[in-house]
Length: 445
Ligand code: HEM
Image 1 (cartoon, rainbow, N blue to C red):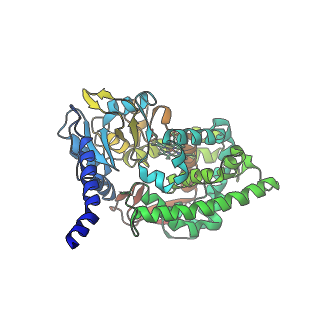
Image 2: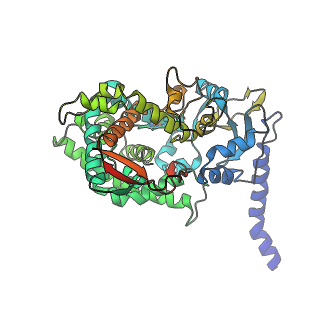
Image 3: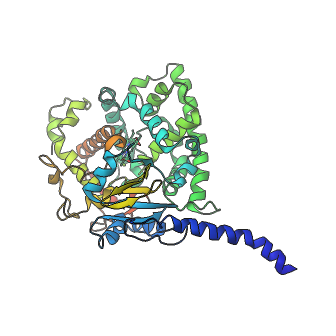
């Protein structure tokens, strides 16, 4: 009797497990798939994928596997999906030039669960909405006007956080750098710091929603953030209506609010959270200074002259790309490098594995900004912002913010690292200096 009850109780679980295992295996039963392994049931090779990143070498997951395959293409199973990983310039070119023809942008389910308002539409529609939303103030004319504000914010940041210190830890401080929402950051900054961290680390995690898992913590933190960001937005909207601060000269949140019209508040809140998470963890200078009188601020034309500084920033993003790589989904069956890619499979391209390829960048671990002199790297070998129709629409904004930050930094300070040989960066999934980058600073004489 007891045995029958136990059997009746567990048999649905066993049957569904067998069904899922078979289904999981069936993904790999097509002929002529790329070489590679499925890994463990359900989780596939997600652990190895995430662990190599947390150990500081996300490219290792890829280089370890491609070593044996001359095609530079392999199959794996990550974030719940069979995935073909493409490597190198040819793989990047293939994905970037086939957007909307053979592939579309895709994010793991964990992302959709952490940002549930995006579940009503596909990743493709979401990305399109966000691009349209951002367009008005990512246009060159808008950015040109924004240089003065960015310069002002950077100045204020160095004055309040860096001046009068001899030692500091750079990474947590740069998170206080007001960028997208000066308003939200300054007032609620400390309170929201922890939930931002939880969402950022949970975005690419194994999607097991049980108390205590990273994924579960990220979902809870995203609810809190959505509430707080919505409240900041409501307040900002009221202030804008009352004529306090003009969107043209104010932070990016005001620009967003002015351009969204009647878009749903939670949707906008999610976009802003996404953007804030993106920025959470993001020689000519003296000549430029000489050309300025007193406290005169930076102009867009000044940033055009900062060639060497931009080469330095590019080399940093080569060795440590802020986004290691992203996914696509096959919208049709196709063949690549003579291997079959079934419809519905995911594809992953990796900026970091491309950037560390010695065929494209000799001695890839050596820091050498001159690589970007002249015509620079060959097409599709340097891809920190992706490529094709999905290429990052914020790249010019990012260029300005980075250059303005660097300009204000070298104008005021010299520095040395407290641990000169400690260079470890962990990718979780965004790159973070393992010790936060402690430095000793000196005022510029
Ligand atoms: C150094 C800073 C940044 C880096 C390295 C970066 C990199 C990237 C990468 C690799 C992608 C994915 C491209 C693909 O899948 O092909 C992306 C997409 C995107 N980025 Fe950035 N980004 C940066 C800053 C920004 C900023 C400042 C903004 C907005 C103000 C922004 C907005 C976006 C948006 C909206 C997308 C999605 C585009 C789409 O799917 O159509 N990014 N970014």
